[in-house]
Length: 385
Image 1 (cartoon, rainbow, N blue to C red):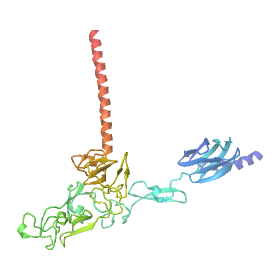
Image 2: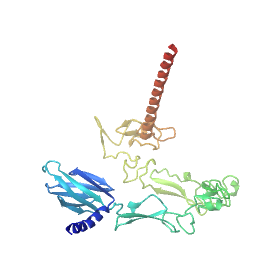
Image 3: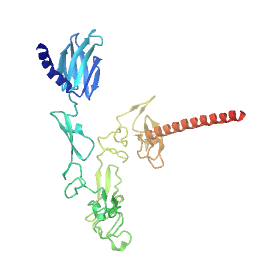
Image 4: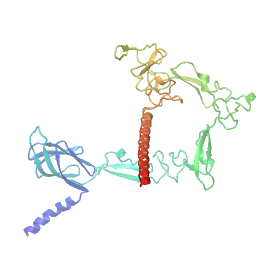
Protein backbone atom coordinates (compact mmCIF):
# COMPACT_ATOMS: atom_id res chain seq x y z
CA UNK A 1 0.00 0.00 0.00
CA UNK A 2 2.86 2.38 0.84
CA UNK A 3 4.50 1.66 -2.52
CA UNK A 4 1.25 2.49 -4.34
CA UNK A 5 0.87 5.70 -2.35
CA UNK A 6 4.49 6.68 -3.10
CA UNK A 7 3.95 6.10 -6.86
CA UNK A 8 0.76 8.15 -6.80
CA UNK A 9 2.59 11.00 -5.11
CA UNK A 10 5.35 10.92 -7.75
CA UNK A 11 2.91 10.74 -10.69
CA UNK A 12 1.96 14.48 -10.84
CA UNK A 13 5.65 15.42 -10.59
CA UNK A 14 6.57 13.07 -13.42
CA UNK A 15 3.78 14.37 -15.60
CA UNK A 16 4.78 17.97 -14.89
CA UNK A 17 8.43 17.21 -15.61
CA UNK A 18 7.51 15.70 -18.96
CA UNK A 19 5.74 18.89 -20.04
CA UNK A 20 8.86 20.72 -21.27
CA UNK A 21 10.33 21.63 -24.63
CA UNK A 22 14.03 21.21 -23.76
CA UNK A 23 16.22 20.06 -20.89
CA UNK A 24 19.90 19.71 -20.01
CA UNK A 25 22.19 19.25 -17.03
CA UNK A 26 25.21 21.55 -17.09
CA UNK A 27 28.13 22.56 -14.89
CA UNK A 28 28.96 26.26 -15.23
CA UNK A 29 31.13 28.81 -13.47
CA UNK A 30 30.07 32.11 -11.93
CA UNK A 31 29.16 34.61 -14.63
CA UNK A 32 28.81 31.94 -17.32
CA UNK A 33 25.61 31.36 -19.27
CA UNK A 34 23.99 28.63 -21.30
CA UNK A 35 21.31 29.12 -23.98
CA UNK A 36 18.60 26.47 -24.10
CA UNK A 37 15.52 26.75 -26.33
CA UNK A 38 16.12 30.48 -26.64
CA UNK A 39 16.29 31.04 -22.87
CA UNK A 40 19.44 32.48 -21.26
CA UNK A 41 20.33 30.73 -17.98
CA UNK A 42 23.19 32.34 -16.00
CA UNK A 43 24.98 31.32 -12.80
CA UNK A 44 25.18 34.73 -11.14
CA UNK A 45 26.76 33.81 -7.77
CA UNK A 46 27.90 30.86 -5.67
CA UNK A 47 27.56 32.00 -2.06
CA UNK A 48 28.62 28.73 -0.41
CA UNK A 49 28.55 24.97 -0.89
CA UNK A 50 24.80 25.05 -0.27
CA UNK A 51 23.47 28.26 -1.85
CA UNK A 52 23.66 29.95 -5.31
CA UNK A 53 21.92 32.67 -7.32
CA UNK A 54 20.60 31.76 -10.79
CA UNK A 55 19.22 34.08 -13.49
CA UNK A 56 16.85 33.30 -16.36
CA UNK A 57 16.78 36.11 -18.92
CA UNK A 58 15.98 39.18 -16.77
CA UNK A 59 14.70 37.30 -13.67
CA UNK A 60 16.73 35.59 -10.91
CA UNK A 61 16.31 33.53 -7.71
CA UNK A 62 18.47 32.46 -4.75
CA UNK A 63 18.42 28.65 -4.47
CA UNK A 64 19.71 25.99 -2.09
CA UNK A 65 21.35 22.67 -2.88
CA UNK A 66 18.88 19.99 -4.10
CA UNK A 67 16.16 22.64 -4.43
CA UNK A 68 13.94 23.09 -7.51
CA UNK A 69 12.40 26.44 -8.47
CA UNK A 70 10.53 27.76 -11.51
CA UNK A 71 11.98 31.01 -12.85
CA UNK A 72 9.91 32.58 -15.62
CA UNK A 73 8.71 29.25 -17.06
CA UNK A 74 12.11 27.53 -16.63
CA UNK A 75 12.53 24.89 -13.90
CA UNK A 76 15.97 24.88 -12.24
CA UNK A 77 17.25 22.13 -9.91
CA UNK A 78 20.54 22.59 -8.02
CA UNK A 79 22.29 19.22 -8.05
CA UNK A 80 25.77 20.20 -6.84
CA UNK A 81 28.01 23.16 -6.01
CA UNK A 82 31.75 23.73 -5.76
CA UNK A 83 32.65 26.73 -3.62
CA UNK A 84 36.38 27.52 -3.42
CA UNK A 85 36.56 31.13 -2.19
CA UNK A 86 35.31 34.61 -2.95
CA UNK A 87 38.46 35.29 -4.96
CA UNK A 88 38.18 32.21 -7.18
CA UNK A 89 35.70 31.05 -9.78
CA UNK A 90 33.09 28.83 -8.17
CA UNK A 91 30.90 26.28 -9.94
CA UNK A 92 27.47 24.67 -9.79
CA UNK A 93 25.72 21.80 -11.54
CA UNK A 94 22.09 22.52 -12.42
CA UNK A 95 19.35 20.58 -14.16
CA UNK A 96 17.33 22.78 -16.52
CA UNK A 97 13.83 22.14 -17.88
CA UNK A 98 12.55 24.84 -20.27
CA UNK A 99 8.75 24.82 -20.12
CA UNK A 100 8.13 27.67 -22.55
CA UNK A 101 10.07 29.45 -25.24
CA UNK A 102 10.17 33.25 -24.66
CA UNK A 103 9.32 34.73 -28.05
CA UNK A 104 8.35 38.31 -27.33
CA UNK A 105 7.64 41.17 -24.95
CA UNK A 106 6.00 43.61 -27.39
CA UNK A 107 4.44 43.36 -30.86
CA UNK A 108 7.57 44.56 -32.68
CA UNK A 109 9.46 41.49 -31.39
CA UNK A 110 7.18 39.38 -33.62
CA UNK A 111 7.90 41.13 -36.91
CA UNK A 112 8.27 38.34 -39.50
CA UNK A 113 9.08 40.78 -42.33
CA UNK A 114 5.97 39.63 -44.21
CA UNK A 115 3.61 42.47 -45.18
CA UNK A 116 0.61 40.17 -45.50
CA UNK A 117 0.49 39.30 -41.77
CA UNK A 118 -0.49 41.14 -38.60
CA UNK A 119 2.21 40.34 -36.03
CA UNK A 120 1.05 40.37 -32.40
CA UNK A 121 2.68 39.44 -29.09
CA UNK A 122 0.37 37.67 -26.63
CA UNK A 123 2.05 39.01 -23.50
CA UNK A 124 0.28 36.64 -21.11
CA UNK A 125 2.19 33.68 -22.60
CA UNK A 126 5.02 35.56 -24.39
CA UNK A 127 4.02 34.02 -27.72
CA UNK A 128 3.85 35.53 -31.23
CA UNK A 129 0.92 35.21 -33.60
CA UNK A 130 1.01 35.98 -37.33
CA UNK A 131 -2.51 36.51 -38.64
CA UNK A 132 -2.92 36.66 -42.43
CA UNK A 133 -4.62 39.87 -43.60
CA UNK A 134 -7.90 38.88 -45.28
CA UNK A 135 -9.65 42.26 -45.47
CA UNK A 136 -9.20 45.57 -47.29
CA UNK A 137 -8.08 47.81 -44.40
CA UNK A 138 -6.58 51.28 -44.65
CA UNK A 139 -3.09 51.98 -43.26
CA UNK A 140 -2.15 48.41 -42.32
CA UNK A 141 0.77 48.45 -44.74
CA UNK A 142 -0.60 45.75 -47.06
CA UNK A 143 -2.80 45.59 -50.13
CA UNK A 144 -4.39 42.13 -50.70
CA UNK A 145 -4.71 41.06 -54.34
CA UNK A 146 -8.52 41.40 -54.22
CA UNK A 147 -8.38 45.04 -53.00
CA UNK A 148 -7.98 48.31 -54.92
CA UNK A 149 -7.16 51.93 -54.14
CA UNK A 150 -10.88 52.57 -53.71
CA UNK A 151 -11.21 50.01 -50.89
CA UNK A 152 -7.72 50.09 -49.33
CA UNK A 153 -5.47 53.16 -49.07
CA UNK A 154 -2.41 50.88 -49.01
CA UNK A 155 -3.05 50.02 -52.67
CA UNK A 156 -1.19 53.12 -53.88
CA UNK A 157 -0.47 51.68 -57.29
CA UNK A 158 -0.92 48.39 -59.06
CA UNK A 159 2.25 46.29 -59.24
CA UNK A 160 1.17 44.73 -62.52
CA UNK A 161 -1.33 45.71 -65.17
CA UNK A 162 -3.02 44.91 -68.46
CA UNK A 163 -4.26 48.43 -69.35
CA UNK A 164 -2.75 51.92 -69.04
CA UNK A 165 -5.65 53.12 -66.88
CA UNK A 166 -4.63 50.65 -64.14
CA UNK A 167 -1.38 52.61 -63.72
CA UNK A 168 -2.84 56.05 -62.94
CA UNK A 169 -0.75 57.48 -60.05
CA UNK A 170 -2.75 60.75 -59.83
CA UNK A 171 0.40 62.69 -60.74
CA UNK A 172 -0.14 65.00 -63.76
CA UNK A 173 3.64 65.22 -64.16
CA UNK A 174 4.01 61.59 -65.28
CA UNK A 175 2.88 59.64 -68.32
CA UNK A 176 1.40 56.40 -67.00
CA UNK A 177 1.66 53.39 -69.30
CA UNK A 178 1.39 49.63 -68.98
CA UNK A 179 3.90 47.25 -70.55
CA UNK A 180 1.33 44.47 -70.46
CA UNK A 181 -1.55 43.57 -72.74
CA UNK A 182 -4.84 41.66 -72.60
CA UNK A 183 -4.44 38.53 -70.48
CA UNK A 184 -0.71 39.28 -70.12
CA UNK A 185 0.07 41.30 -67.00
CA UNK A 186 3.25 43.36 -66.78
CA UNK A 187 4.74 46.37 -64.96
CA UNK A 188 3.47 49.96 -64.86
CA UNK A 189 5.76 52.76 -66.00
CA UNK A 190 5.55 56.38 -64.81
CA UNK A 191 7.69 58.50 -67.11
CA UNK A 192 8.23 62.17 -66.11
CA UNK A 193 6.71 64.57 -68.66
CA UNK A 194 9.33 66.97 -70.03
CA UNK A 195 7.79 67.80 -73.43
CA UNK A 196 5.99 71.15 -73.82
CA UNK A 197 2.61 69.85 -75.00
CA UNK A 198 -0.77 71.59 -74.78
CA UNK A 199 -3.84 69.78 -73.46
CA UNK A 200 -2.20 67.40 -70.97
CA UNK A 201 -3.01 69.58 -67.93
CA UNK A 202 0.67 69.85 -67.00
CA UNK A 203 3.36 72.50 -67.41
CA UNK A 204 6.93 71.07 -67.33
CA UNK A 205 9.86 73.23 -66.25
CA UNK A 206 11.18 75.26 -69.19
CA UNK A 207 7.78 75.61 -70.91
CA UNK A 208 5.92 78.88 -71.47
CA UNK A 209 2.43 79.94 -72.56
CA UNK A 210 3.47 81.97 -75.59
CA UNK A 211 1.95 81.04 -78.99
CA UNK A 212 4.92 82.56 -80.86
CA UNK A 213 7.02 79.71 -79.44
CA UNK A 214 4.71 77.06 -80.92
CA UNK A 215 6.54 73.84 -81.70
CA UNK A 216 9.34 74.54 -79.22
CA UNK A 217 8.56 75.85 -75.69
CA UNK A 218 4.87 76.77 -76.06
CA UNK A 219 2.45 74.99 -73.72
CA UNK A 220 -1.06 76.40 -73.29
CA UNK A 221 -1.38 74.54 -69.96
CA UNK A 222 1.18 76.94 -68.42
CA UNK A 223 -0.03 80.04 -66.59
CA UNK A 224 0.77 83.33 -68.32
CA UNK A 225 1.63 84.71 -64.87
CA UNK A 226 4.62 82.40 -64.29
CA UNK A 227 7.66 84.46 -63.26
CA UNK A 228 10.26 81.74 -63.93
CA UNK A 229 10.72 78.86 -66.36
CA UNK A 230 13.31 76.70 -64.57
CA UNK A 231 15.39 76.54 -61.38
CA UNK A 232 18.39 78.29 -62.95
CA UNK A 233 16.25 81.44 -63.34
CA UNK A 234 16.12 81.71 -59.53
CA UNK A 235 19.81 81.58 -58.56
CA UNK A 236 20.52 84.41 -56.10
CA UNK A 237 24.28 83.63 -55.68
CA UNK A 238 23.74 82.99 -51.97
CA UNK A 239 25.10 79.59 -50.89
CA UNK A 240 22.86 79.71 -47.80
CA UNK A 241 19.64 79.38 -49.83
CA UNK A 242 17.94 76.66 -51.87
CA UNK A 243 16.90 78.28 -55.14
CA UNK A 244 13.86 76.76 -56.84
CA UNK A 245 11.28 77.63 -59.45
CA UNK A 246 8.30 76.45 -57.40
CA UNK A 247 4.70 75.62 -58.31
CA UNK A 248 3.07 73.29 -60.80
CA UNK A 249 3.07 75.98 -63.49
CA UNK A 250 -0.56 75.60 -64.42
CA UNK A 251 -1.48 78.08 -61.68
CA UNK A 252 1.50 80.35 -60.93
CA UNK A 253 5.18 79.38 -60.82
CA UNK A 254 7.49 81.71 -58.83
CA UNK A 255 11.05 81.72 -57.46
CA UNK A 256 11.65 80.66 -53.87
CA UNK A 257 14.98 81.12 -52.08
CA UNK A 258 14.65 79.31 -48.76
CA UNK A 259 17.41 79.39 -46.16
CA UNK A 260 19.19 76.03 -45.90
CA UNK A 261 18.69 74.50 -42.45
CA UNK A 262 19.42 70.83 -43.20
CA UNK A 263 22.93 69.47 -42.62
CA UNK A 264 23.45 68.21 -46.16
CA UNK A 265 26.89 67.38 -47.53
CA UNK A 266 27.91 68.56 -51.00
CA UNK A 267 25.85 71.78 -51.22
CA UNK A 268 28.88 74.02 -50.42
CA UNK A 269 27.12 75.46 -47.36
CA UNK A 270 27.26 74.75 -43.63
CA UNK A 271 24.02 75.77 -41.83
CA UNK A 272 24.23 77.04 -38.27
CA UNK A 273 24.41 74.17 -35.77
CA UNK A 274 25.90 71.65 -38.22
CA UNK A 275 29.33 70.04 -37.80
CA UNK A 276 31.84 68.47 -40.15
CA UNK A 277 30.77 65.02 -38.92
CA UNK A 278 27.37 65.28 -40.61
CA UNK A 279 28.15 67.94 -43.25
CA UNK A 280 31.62 68.00 -44.80
CA UNK A 281 30.94 71.55 -46.08
CA UNK A 282 31.51 72.70 -42.50
CA UNK A 283 35.14 73.84 -42.24
CA UNK A 284 37.12 74.27 -39.04
CA UNK A 285 35.75 77.06 -36.85
CA UNK A 286 37.99 80.02 -36.01
CA UNK A 287 38.21 78.96 -32.39
CA UNK A 288 39.06 75.35 -33.27
CA UNK A 289 42.59 74.12 -34.00
CA UNK A 290 44.11 70.78 -35.01
CA UNK A 291 47.23 69.63 -33.23
CA UNK A 292 49.83 68.59 -35.81
CA UNK A 293 53.45 67.59 -35.56
CA UNK A 294 55.06 71.02 -35.26
CA UNK A 295 52.35 73.69 -35.46
CA UNK A 296 48.61 74.34 -35.26
CA UNK A 297 46.14 74.38 -38.14
CA UNK A 298 43.56 77.18 -38.12
CA UNK A 299 40.78 78.29 -40.42
CA UNK A 300 43.04 80.10 -42.93
CA UNK A 301 45.40 78.42 -45.40
CA UNK A 302 47.58 79.58 -48.28
CA UNK A 303 48.60 76.58 -50.40
CA UNK A 304 45.73 75.41 -52.64
CA UNK A 305 45.32 71.62 -52.48
CA UNK A 306 47.54 71.15 -49.43
CA UNK A 307 46.43 68.22 -47.24
CA UNK A 308 46.91 68.35 -43.46
CA UNK A 309 45.25 66.14 -40.85
CA UNK A 310 42.44 64.87 -43.17
CA UNK A 311 41.63 68.39 -44.38
CA UNK A 312 42.48 70.18 -47.63
CA UNK A 313 43.09 73.82 -48.49
CA UNK A 314 40.60 75.35 -50.93
CA UNK A 315 40.01 79.04 -51.63
CA UNK A 316 42.05 80.00 -48.56
CA UNK A 317 40.13 77.88 -46.00
CA UNK A 318 40.48 74.34 -44.64
CA UNK A 319 37.76 71.82 -45.49
CA UNK A 320 37.41 68.21 -44.41
CA UNK A 321 38.23 65.54 -46.97
CA UNK A 322 35.13 63.83 -48.31
CA UNK A 323 33.98 60.25 -47.91
CA UNK A 324 33.30 57.73 -50.68
CA UNK A 325 30.67 58.62 -53.35
CA UNK A 326 30.72 62.31 -52.29
CA UNK A 327 30.97 64.94 -55.05
CA UNK A 328 34.45 66.19 -55.92
CA UNK A 329 36.51 67.93 -58.59
CA UNK A 330 40.08 67.19 -57.37
CA UNK A 331 41.78 64.11 -55.95
CA UNK A 332 42.90 65.94 -52.80
CA UNK A 333 39.27 66.54 -51.79
CA UNK A 334 38.75 62.78 -51.21
CA UNK A 335 39.78 60.70 -48.21
CA UNK A 336 40.98 57.97 -50.56
CA UNK A 337 42.90 60.46 -52.74
CA UNK A 338 40.96 59.51 -55.88
CA UNK A 339 38.27 61.65 -57.56
CA UNK A 340 36.68 59.63 -60.35
CA UNK A 341 35.87 61.05 -63.79
CA UNK A 342 32.18 60.94 -62.86
CA UNK A 343 32.89 63.59 -60.19
CA UNK A 344 32.62 61.47 -57.04
CA UNK A 345 35.15 60.15 -54.53
CA UNK A 346 36.28 56.55 -54.72
CA UNK A 347 35.00 54.70 -51.64
CA UNK A 348 37.30 52.74 -49.33
CA UNK A 349 35.04 49.73 -49.81
CA UNK A 350 35.69 49.85 -53.56
CA UNK A 351 39.45 49.84 -52.98
CA UNK A 352 39.08 46.90 -50.60
CA UNK A 353 36.98 44.99 -53.16
CA UNK A 354 39.51 45.73 -55.92
CA UNK A 355 42.31 44.41 -53.72
CA UNK A 356 40.35 41.25 -52.97
CA UNK A 357 39.68 40.75 -56.68
CA UNK A 358 43.38 41.27 -57.50
CA UNK A 359 44.51 38.83 -54.81
CA UNK A 360 41.97 36.25 -55.98
CA UNK A 361 43.14 36.65 -59.58
CA UNK A 362 46.80 36.25 -58.52
CA UNK A 363 46.02 33.09 -56.55
CA UNK A 364 44.11 31.60 -59.49
CA UNK A 365 46.91 32.56 -61.91
CA UNK A 366 49.53 31.00 -59.61
CA UNK A 367 47.49 27.83 -59.29
CA UNK A 368 47.07 27.54 -63.07
CA UNK A 369 50.82 28.15 -63.51
CA UNK A 370 51.60 25.29 -61.13
CA UNK A 371 49.24 22.96 -63.00
CA UNK A 372 50.83 23.99 -66.31
CA UNK A 373 54.34 23.34 -64.97
CA UNK A 374 53.27 19.98 -63.59
CA UNK A 375 51.71 18.91 -66.91
CA UNK A 376 54.79 20.11 -68.82
CA UNK A 377 57.22 18.00 -66.79
CA UNK A 378 54.83 15.07 -66.77
CA UNK A 379 54.72 15.19 -70.57
CA UNK A 380 58.54 15.32 -70.77
CA UNK A 381 58.93 12.35 -68.45
CA UNK A 382 56.46 10.29 -70.47
CA UNK A 383 58.15 11.21 -73.75
CA UNK A 384 61.52 9.95 -72.43
CA UNK A 385 59.95 6.66 -71.47
